[in-house]
Image (cartoon, rainbow, N blue to C red; front, side, top):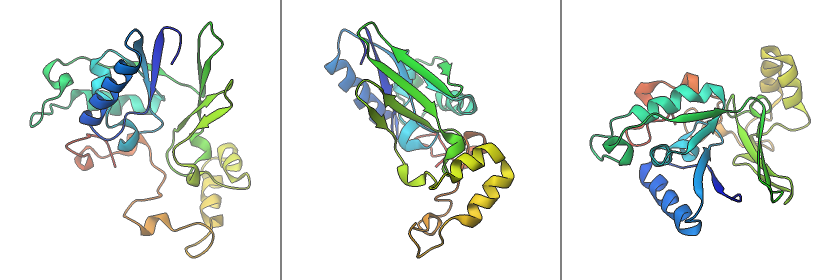
Length: 208
């Protein structure tokens, strides 16, 4: 929360959750504009509730690769259970983060967004949130950050480094759990561009 506006960090699951989030923010800060909505990455527990924020006029803050996915999310008809955006369609507005973006105000409060996608084993783009004055880092999936500098090597070395990383990861039964054994596709590094619309949930309209 800043002097005259609010930045919402993540909108999970579905439109109903997004409506509850919007109502909570308005109750807590009735005199402040909900100006921006940021989401960490394209999976639905971070982005599935964005539709009410789009309808409310918040600018969606994300990386370039996620823009087509959110445009598609905003266009979904939601015919079975119309939400505010279905009843009153509007196109989303975007602020695209290229590596880093900072929000601040005159009070000295700042919020830094950092794209660490090149260093994770989860998604191609991944925003984390850092409040420098409070020395507070918010990040949703720390278990998917590689150890011992392998992420830095992959970021510098491209596909060859990524393949080497995969071979060097602990196997099942070692110090890292086998995420892929939990459900099909779990633990696989994904991108919004790789989402097949036929696999999107009718509720969230984003790739799981």
